[in-house]
Length: 78
Image (cartoon, rainbow, N blue to C red; front, side):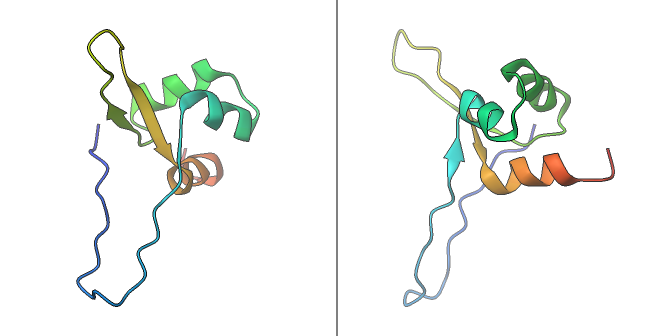
């Protein structure tokens, strides 16, 4: 699984736009599928997602960029 990189601009005058990140549940609602479908796509490597750590007792979770979700949804190569 690839690590998501944070795009940084070397031009300090350029306006930095933060990408929107979705949880698995939010991604599933957005594309109208079940959460398990999103998890399978992440596990198979078809959908890029970054893992975030939780606090001491929390398990953390995945975050998905909207661009990656749309690329997975509309990609004809699959």
